[in-house]
Image (cartoon, rainbow, N blue to C red):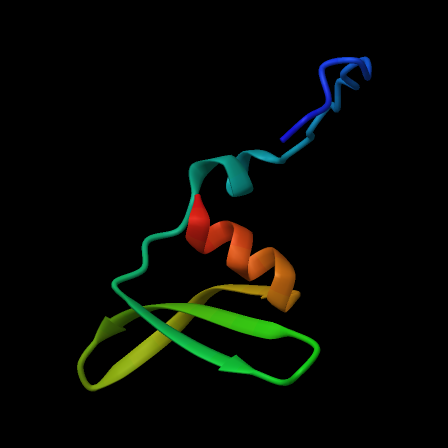
Length: 68
């Protein structure tokens, strides 16, 4: 939780149009090592799947994502 005594810092996030559009996924695969998790999001239409997005993150951050 943020400390109310500390001033909040504003961050600008930039994204191109393709990223803002998003990507459809109806399947996800998770793999991991001790240091990182890899989340692969795919669009699955038999007989094949197309990788639409990959997110690589730390175990600590993944715990915060799950909690959110």
